[in-house]
Length: 412
Image 1 (tube, rainbow, N blue to C red):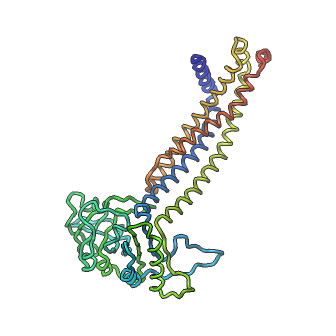
Image 2: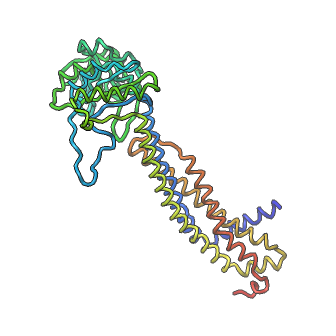
Image 3: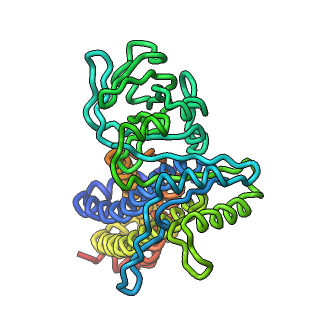
């Protein structure tokens, strides 16, 4: 039995080699569909994993008050109402009056994204982000300290000349020394490094490790741009109290904005897990598109493989007649053509998986996402190519098995 299977596999490979160009084209057609599936799903997995990990690090018990809702867009061709920026007066009044139990409020603003940082005679390219923060920002944002300490309440209230730097900034300026208590220069102001953040990575080209965190009040004396938009983040220690914390935050911020009961909010409120759910919805649509594209392509590859095997049966009619005359059973003939179809299908599947993973890896590298091996897509691709081979090989194999040996021997 095993010797017969081995012999049929050998014959199948000999047949593939004898019609190499046709086989290569068929394998490529199958591979294109699998590449589309695995490649798109690899890219989607990298996107979902990177963004979800960034937001999930903040925790499901965090919400933000911001200028707009996440899903603000034009509706029915009408321009949306322009919300005022979240001003310093807004955030300070909120911080002073928000007293919901078991919560921490963080305040931050982006001073610049193009700062040049100096240490002794070394300086960075002007691409460092500088943020002004209060003592709760690092905790609420899901960041961690790798060396040294966080900025504390006294640093913020006393406008101390201290800072926390990102891991990439440390590598650029202070790679050969202990960065703690070293002095760096930002726009001519001197700051002592008291902490270094753990590596966070980049999202959509935004390097989260190339930044400096300054005490809020001190940062405001350096960056005095008009209409600075501040960020508010509230974290609850107990998740079951999140809804109540949100309701009180909305009510307080409406009072700060002096909105009457019939006016709509002129600010947005977003929860971290809401953003993750939206991302999952978007990636779900992309996955559906990937399946539709690959199914259409794979349908074409099924027809191509079926056509190839029918041509192969016709070209080898005399060979089939000889084998039957020598005593080959119908099942043996059918198995020979069936295993040939399976081999071609799997070659296309393997090539498609390799190209798809390579495509996903290149995409992740270009946009600086974390590449994730798409095991689900790979398993699905293997199953799909097997099913394609079974469907495409069944009719040709059955046709070859039913050929009359006498008529086959007469075939020219």
